[in-house]
Length: 221
Image 1: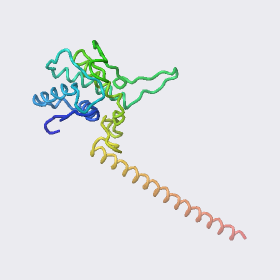
Image 2 (image 1 turned 90 degrees about the vertical axis):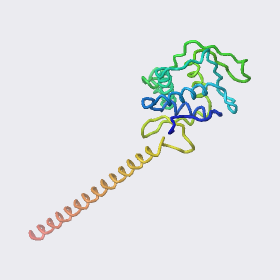
Image 3 (image 1 turned 90 degrees about the horizontal axis):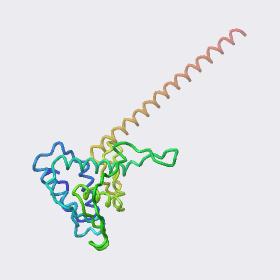
């Protein structure tokens, strides 16, 4: 993402889900003005209906404002928390309820939106504020089977879109996990070797003690 464009074309459900996952994990603190402009274009395109995307809600914002950087960060924070809640399910409590984690099991603060089922054939059309439309589209895409590929990296807890049998979000995390695994194996080998040496010494001491005991018994006879 050299140009900081986190998507090129949003034609399918999978690519739209991939966009929102990458958007949630972007480090916006290092963005320059050109990066913000590209991101605004990507968010606007995220709301439009891709030609090959026949699932998910169609959003029609009442106004298409020029979002401020703070407003984009506000949207990102809620998308990030909501995705975290998808991959980290809450723990059940004793009252058949759930133990919610702050900042993880979040709720969307939707304010004023209207839905219709007749404007777009076979799909829900949403009208409302720009930020509410973005969050609603995110929620609708998370109900798609493709969203099952959204997982949390076991190494860094970063949320990412898994491809195939992918386990870690990046090569860096893969290498870290391999180094940790190797160190654990080396530690287990070293521990077993130390235990074997101690056992060997114990056997030697036991044999020596038995030999000394036999010698004493012979002398007494």
